[in-house]
Length: 86
Image 1 (cartoon, rainbow, N blue to C red):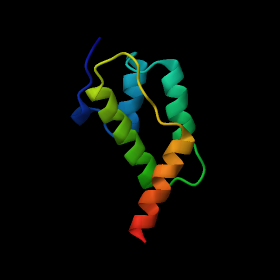
Image 2: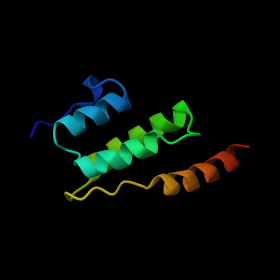
Image 3: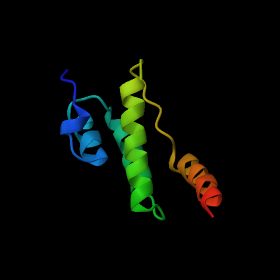
């Protein structure tokens, strides 16, 4: 499996897609990632932050199983972050 160089991959979304196409992300995990990214109410910055977060999780993962936060978990986390910004 070829390792992807994040500096040559463009945006976090591009990097995530390349990882999926390279087989580093299973279909089930990809579906969960896309469900979260497509969630209504997320800002562009929040989507980019989630994509960066998932790229970092994949890089640091030592096991084959990838834990992808559920959309509800992501919404809970974002509500806490949004409160702290106000």
